[in-house]
Amino acid sequence: MRILLLISVVFFIGSQAFAQSKHDLIYLSEEPKEVKVKEIGQSNIKYTYPDEEVVYSINKFLVSKVEFESGRVENFKSPLKPVNNLTDAKDVYLTFNPDEVTGLYNLGNLFSKATGVTTLSSINKVNNRALEKLKYEATMMGANAVYIGNQYQRGNQYGNEYTPGNSTQTSYSGMAFSNKKLNLDEIEEMLKTQQLTPFQKVVLKRNGWSPKTFDKPSFTDSGESIALDIEKITRSEDAIFVTIPSLRAKSNKLKVVSYQEDSITLMERDDNGITNYLLLTENHPFIRNIRENINN
Image 1 (cartoon, one colour):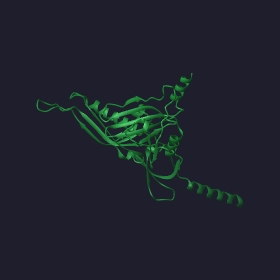
Image 2: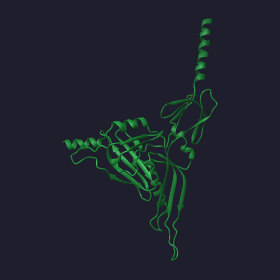
Image 3: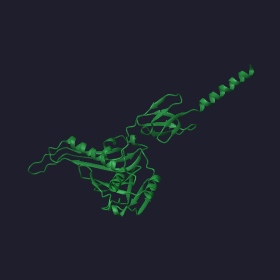
Image 4: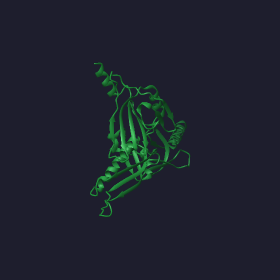
């Protein structure tokens, strides 16, 4: 009897110790984080680490779910969607709330402006065009979220015989963000080992209406794919830049803004606008299909 009682006491103590060691779990894209959730707010989650008092905060957009010590699970749906090319530009998330971009990766400032053609131009249409351009520029920077810090809007101003009229104008300025951090090691390995072929050049002028796409010659007359020679790879703490003279870019350093298994996108920006260069690897379906057709 005493033995059974002793076993029961040991089991009870062990169960209590196990229960006390259990904590809340915050699920991030990388791995779960063991914490004690203190508060779930509108834009962030506040928590402490086990046996610590310091309170930390994390953007809710970066959390897929919270599994509480009690066993209850609370799921979160982030409005941030993958944005890989211009067809995804509509999915760029716009916000006026700075809390919603806290903890995301800052990719730099951006600016968009749209002006009506005449003094009869629709204010709403011009405003929508400015927002659309803002999303295009964010996409070309490798971002999927934009914090709008400033908005300016002017209505149609009708002139007279002494004063010229002005059509409606809207401009936005803000910061571009992404919830995904580029893997610089993978990018550098790709640049050093893969043969890259030019495919497209995309240009968005500051005063333009929308991006313009120009096809780049990918093959020689003899059917050989054009391989680009990378003169220099420069790596900083959070970005990689390349120098490719044959692209004839205005800048000597083009920033890598996105990449897939079979493609990589470079960017250059100045006061006149933003330009992307899409390069394909030998494993891209377009390159493979063209080569097969030539060989057949």
